Length: 135
Image (tube, rainbow, N blue to C red; front, side):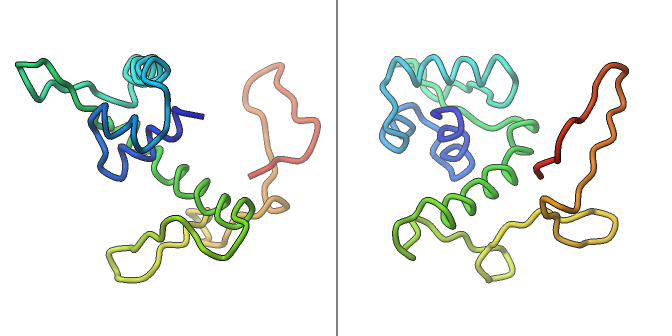
């Protein structure tokens, strides 16, 4: 839970520990553990910004930046299915000036991906698909 929230906050510009504590609501010890794990797996870099006292901020790596479309899609899902009213906690604006409504589209045909438009074809020996693919 907190890893996704941390990645959301970093992608929105909150990069310092105290900002992340405040914006995610994570207990400090839990946040410390999550940040270490996100650095260890290579989605965040830990960068010192103050010598005295020694302080760090967390920046998304190239791998971390690639998670942004996933986070945006999860946010849109939450807005559709978890909000009790039409009021959303945040609206994102694209550089074109319009509200961003993320979609997953096929890079070849440009059509929107829906659960019934995807078929899995395992490429590793021993792997099988026994049910529908959820996209």
